[in-house]
Image 1 (cartoon, helix red, strand yellow):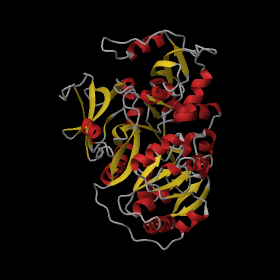
Image 2 (cartoon, helix red, strand yellow):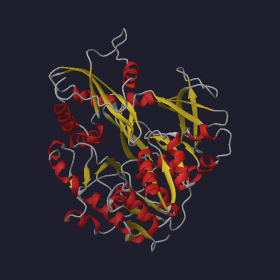
Image 3 (tube, one colour):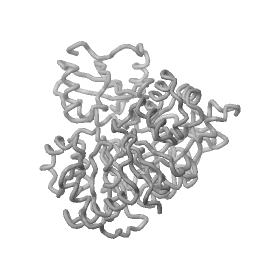
Image 4 (cartoon, helix red, strand yellow):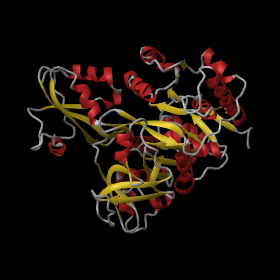
Length: 506
């Protein structure tokens, strides 16, 4: 509709208009259908840092009727290999900074036919092939495989359909924000997760997509872009919001170039959002969602965040808001019976945004999807006005800097050390990151350096424990289950500044 509008910018430099973005997507689609000869429904993975090519690749995948499998660029190559194998990915797009790590695992993936690196000659040929016609797909066909860790520690592929993503996008317009010509979404968080999913509203409105030159989160750079481009929005984890607010306050930056900052992915403390509103004004919206119900369970609007005259304002800004418009949200007891306001129960969600299930995992799908409802595993309660407050995560998920960390996957790596006999991992509240990883261990003849090296060899750096605490025995109940509640109580007795790592040997 608006082919001449700028679509993609690198920093302050316009790179592509919508005409060229569409042409490239259609050319990439033609290439994928001819060589490596993919068919509708085949999976194509993206193991990429944020890049100006990300959107043209995504739309090339969908133009050809294929399924996108974005992989977190921070993952260890072994973790990326597991996802590629599980998804049976036939093709991989890998950014130049990650290409060397992929070379070490590509030979172990027999289903992987081709690997393309944006900027290479092979990739340039994709971009300039004769464009292909759009491949029709049905609303319930899978569009995106979103890999999220499960309670076993192994990632599961959430099957997000075209209907799911359309519903999520509709809720953005009704419950989060509107998008006008000239508005810009800046991708300071990874494309492979929530930030990338929020490109849809901006594409539908022919608005701007901005890739920071840093390819990531830099408060100074974001402030510069807000001044030069204006009407700048972004999705950010609470820790990113805190750093941006601190920078703006410290350097007396004019925040008027920012339009909307949507935050989610972890706990936002009341005092932090109060300070953010004080420093930057009424520019914030909170969302609560899961990969299984992408970005769409509840939302706390800018109007409610700004309503300081309301007698329960402090309670409301500590909540995650009210149910978004195209979902039903309830809290239930263990039997699935809906609970009244004020009672804490498991949060369940129903609607067209809820996933189709987990890829090739019928048992996990049956456990998560019951009687038409998604069991989130999160605990919360409603107030009389429909505001939902989260109270705990029943799956012991740790959220650090907006990234999900499941204790089991860290525990399994630490147990690879012959000197480690038992281990239990929990999250420790921390102002900067929301939570940090703490490992309680029964071990002998183990150094911290050895444990750090073991983690770095098998899992992403951000999952490595920040503290190791060596004890004689893990607290357990009569059935032998580790009592993580007791570990949290023990951790709370320590000085927050105390480093629980041992100097050398335990």
